[in-house]
Image (cartoon, rainbow, N blue to C red):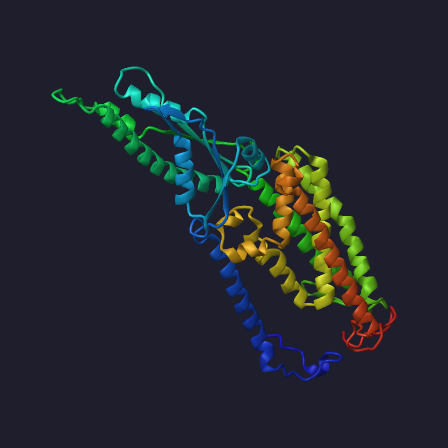
Length: 449
């Protein structure tokens, strides 16, 4: 069997003597990472409806009311008051607004659905009550529930479940009141025979409201039920994140600061005399060049796969910006923290980013600590912009505005971090070669082969 080379056989090698903490540290770091992964991902998917908070739904009451028995009655107002009181405010953010504002919020993805009580609701209920006594054709009054699948298909299903429960309670309450009202009218005069409701009339009055659920602006084909925005976000972030690591490693190898291994082959050239700041500038330049190329590749593949894209140029430009911002920030973190930057980048961009992106489960259906992360996590900001460009006609109010300025802010912070860190290290003489106090010139012999 081949033996490990003796210390004397390796130029510059010292006697083996790794301290115990060197063996324990990887186990400790992986354990902490496992705990973080479990907290983020299992908490993210554990029970979305239990985790509901600030879930936005619009309620529109257009009911004009009617005159019943000489008194003005508005059942729509009664239902609105009941829903406002009974729907838990700590879970559902019920927007009681007009129809125009509700349509605008749906169009901008600010609410996940709307409940609409029509203008003739009370009038139709009174007609239904009368028809239970007097024969004739009649239609049940309708309450319409619009879901917003473009904002989130999972949120649309939550809206439907919430509305099913709420409308079942409304149907029961209104049905009981309507039945009692009709029975009062059927009360016999003294000495007259009692009049009974027919079985069909009782069934009709027990469930007097027809609840119709329909999507507001259904998703087009080729969007994977809305998941295309999430996965487009994912590839933008991944190419920026992984691109930073690839550029960092390959440039350092070319400059002689990191060896390259290809299977059994090992290559390590003499380091080039270059400052940390200039090295980072080279890496940033490579990221800036590759970002639009990668964004163009994604757009071309999406077109080949017949993915519906109504605004290709803005999507291409924003994609290039997002990739640049992630790659530049990732390179700055690596320049500032060295090897530890790999772990920091993975946690910031992936571990914390995926659950807080809102790409599959809406933020309002995740634990509040994940909702807090969404305020600044890069993936959520990119998702808002991509979703707006793909599903909401590129409206700034639908998330593109937030995504744009947050991406620019992230890029600015990344540049500042890299510039400050590398300049500080260079000014203090903290060169990258631990065996020398200054960079060696190209062609110098290496002390460690």
